[in-house]
Image (cartoon, rainbow, N blue to C red):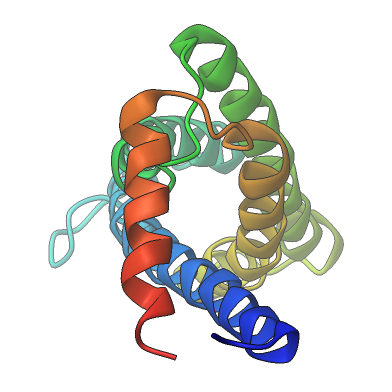
Length: 178
């Protein structure tokens, strides 16, 4: 019979393992969303690589960033709802999606602030500067914020039987590894 300290260690390990699994899945979904966001932004602002000219939204980079992020956001919601946080999802998809959008808009505001600062305060308007400010610095800050917000507010419910069962199965399987 395990003692209280052993049980505490097993529970801590289970919590850590679940968090590590969520971070990994969140990272993979985030990578996919990043590729979608960055590719679309660069295409609509700078055009197709290797061709002369500019993209159709060259003169409105903030709107281009909003468009690219909105499309990537739908991909991220689906991936996080049905894979990363499937054991935490709410039964009311609409409520969950609204929360997801709100926190994504706040995350987007972080990226837009970085892009706007680079473009309009520092006067940097090259493709490299845009990508470093919006898709580098802004992305990192926004990602940390979004993971915390999703886990704390959006996917905070251990609700449906399938999700709760998946979490219980995961906890049971990892407890034997300690």
